[in-house]
Image (cartoon, rainbow, N blue to C red; front, side, top):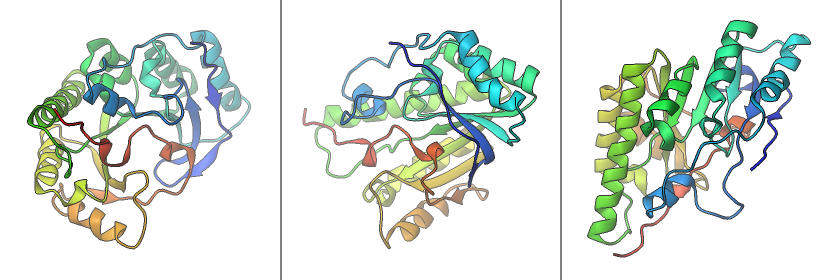
Length: 255
C-alpha cells in the first residue's frame, strides 16, 4: 500500500517542545479495532513494508529543516506505527547524521518483538512505547484472559530487548481507562515493567474516550504506584496524541 509521508508544519508540543511531526505509515481502517486488539483476538502482528520510497521520504522530512525550520525534535508517529515502514531505521540514522536533530518514535510496541524492528527503533534518540493493561474488568473467558496475559508478556519482552540491544531512551506511555486504572494487578504490572526495563520516562495519560472530572484522580492513583519520576499528562489535541489504541484496549470475547 502506497502512503506518502505526511510532514506537518512545525508546532509546539507539550511533551516534546517544538517538533516536526511526521507520519510514515497508514493507520487501521476507520472504525476498526486498534492493532493490539486485533493481535489479541488472534490476528498476526501487522507487516512491515516500504510505504514510500525511502529517499523521497527522507527528502520530505529534511526539506523544512534545510529551509530553516527550527525544531527541538523530529517525531515519527501517528495512527500508523512508523516502525511499520521498513526504512524507518535508515531515515532515523540519516536524520541524526545529516540534520543533527533529536528524534522520537511513537509506537504502540506491537512490532518490538521482532529483532529487525528493534534495530530500526534503536536508531532513534527516544522510543515512546505504549504499555497495555494486563486485566480489563468485564471481560470474560479463561482462554481470553490467558491470551491477554501472554500478549502482555510478549509486549514487555520486546521492550526489555530494546533496552538491552540498543542505546535508545525508552519512554513508557500508560493509557488509563475508566476501568483499567482501578485494577490493582494492572498497577502492579505497570510498575514492575517500568522498573524492569529501567524506563527513562514514564507517563500516565487518559485512554481515548476517558474524559471528565474523574480523570485526574484516576491517573494519580496509577502514577503514585509507579517509579518516582513518573508523570501525568492530559492530552492537548496536537498530532502526537493521535495514536492507535482503544479505550481499555477493547473487550475480550467469550471463549
